Image (tube, rainbow, N blue to C red; front, top):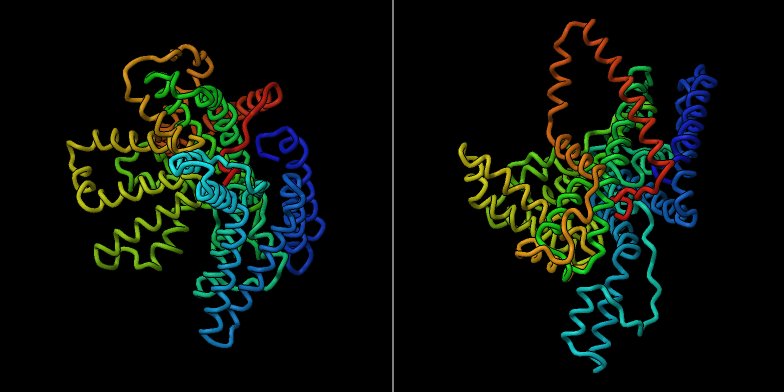
Length: 500
């Protein structure tokens, strides 16, 4: 079940909201103000939400919850530092083992399959290497691919952060298993983040105050997020997906650049739209999640891009990998090593495909170059316009690698972007009026224009603000109605980051 679906909007969410606030009203005179009862409603709702995506993986989620709950108890009350460290190590290893099994074992089996096939003389090593790059299997092992559970990378990383923070004394131990389970499995951020640290929601889980104003903010944020997903991301996705189905042999520069730009817009509005909806849902229940995006496409360097893109993931790697390795408080050689490791892992985190590995390595090398000398050049006043072009160019090429099914296709696609000729298709074979409008809207909304308008409105007289706020409310109602019409009348794509 996804947020931009009829069943979620018209059935699941209304039922959960009614049950949540009715429970709060019924138990408001309890000593805890009904907090425990409301948390129970949210946890039960989250279990149902995840179970609708595959009930058998509820056992996996339960296993992760038990491992990290017990791990938290052990690292908090271990007999000594060695015992606490051992408990932390075992807990982290168990988390990563589960992640490896479900996310990466398929790739390693394919590699082993091809290597043994070639070693037995049934294929040349060149064929073996080509098959591995294309993620093909010989079928000799008769191995059935393991299905990736939805959201596993997100809730395992979130669980690891909790145990590490308890070990470091950066977070309080949560002794109540139900409250701990709510932290990990809360449905707005369970499937695709944002990755939330326990210390950020500890107070809200224990005691939070809902309000009409906060609920209104949540509804507004949810509507805008849905519009991003349904009206922009899905529309440009139709163009990108159609082109990516075609063999690169038949594509030309114009068509490949069209697909690259469309996917660049798709992944941003798809993922930031999901984050907006998750943040909005959180507000409806009294939670305030941190922002996950900050206009990444206006960046003037790769370093700035990663400060603005998927902020919760970047922060996680910074706090749990980069800083423990020494961060920037070390020799330059170790600093560059730390950057390399972090972005190698960032690429690998996204999936078991050589495309993600190369994507991560690309960013690692570019960030190292920026640290060595390029970063200073990009900050020169007259260079800044070119810096934005450089950063956007790198990001677009990166998304081509990220989007491609395998590295062979990615390299062929990129080569066509810089090859003269139109191939067998033209740009007009794919674009429509609707997709053109979506692209233009996407480009416009990638800029902080409306953030500036909102800041300006805040300085106007209260009466004028009231009129403008009323007009915005009407606009949101129309936007919601149109988004729902689009969902009902046509097909839509699942959120991209559900696969991670």
